[in-house]
Image (cartoon, rainbow, N blue to C red; front, top):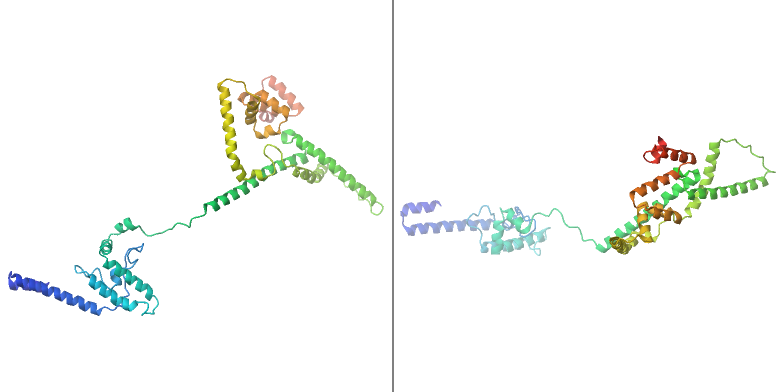
Length: 392
């Protein structure tokens, strides 16, 4: 300070004067600080500054020094000691204590004032607080950054599993219903429109059509008998001539509800195309997985062991291999005689499978096309599958 420099120049090295000058400077600074403390107003101290403290380790977003009315940037090398902090805390607590101050927010202010006093009067905490003022990386490294998200409440695992299994079971039931319905729709169409085998007709559709026509004929006969009883009272309507296509369309419209009713009474078309039951629920299928895996592994182990010993295929192995080759649908739809023929032909061999498929396609041809195809095959002309040959 200026007085120190003046004492130095006057004393010219005299130690006593130099010490005395420093003592005067210290007393003056103490007087200045005391006058500042006396001018401090606890009720007017509303500027609490800012501090990076997202985890509320110290005073939250406020500056602990500012809360108690100190300015960290201005007190320099003479920071307030514990005595000054205690004096300021008492002054502010008397002003903002909830029992004495009924203003709105007084309790929150008092809590912050008490926390600031606790931080600044604890030596270790105050040192950490001062060091982290301009070193936010140190704060983040120790306490973490601001929380921009939070974990959702923990879900009940049991409830989640039950909901998933319930939804999956409903979905599996609906899908099974759709599989059955798709076969039912094709069968109804084939029976009503009298489709040939090569266009999607089956022996079952032919049988359904015959039954439906008999029922339709009985209904028409009953309607004619009923109309003949009223012939004496009503005039006969003049019959309208219809073309062959119109008659066919009229017959199909009359036959469709009859065939639909008969098809809806069929619960199982075979090959897994059945109406949904409790066995089709996902929960039941999952419960059957261990047993299915065990049976599959056991069968393959036995099969591999028999092949290593070069033993002949038994009936079970022949059936399983053939069933895998032709598929579940064709195997289930085939009669016992056709199944025996399939096993005999060893359809799991690629060449045998190709010949058998060609034979099945040949059977769908009309008698004239079949004879023509046989003649051309003897000459070596047909190439590719039968559908390509028919287009040519």
